[in-house]
Amino acid sequence: MPKPPRVDLRSRVYDPNDFVTSGKWVRVSSSNVASIRYDNDNHVMWVRFLNGQIYYYSDVLPSIARRFFMSASKGKFIWALRRSGYVGVKV
Image 1 (cartoon, rainbow, N blue to C red):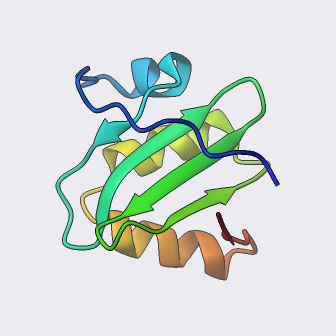
Image 2 (cartoon, one colour; image 1 turned 180 degrees about the horizontal axis):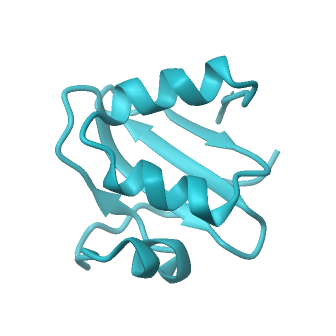
């Protein structure tokens, strides 16, 4: 299991391509998700929920990470991701 990256929300990322390449946690507006991060080198997407729990999803293509970043509902996107076969691993 990969070690969760340190959460640092001081930087701002607004562009989906920057989200994919920066490797930084990004605060999002969501009723369930607090912040998200994408590790482009390992194709791992990290999700930190408002309750503090962190999950990661392996083998996530950059195009899917970009769509997640741009999605209007992060929670709905996560559920769709899970229904399509991705497994979230709680850290």
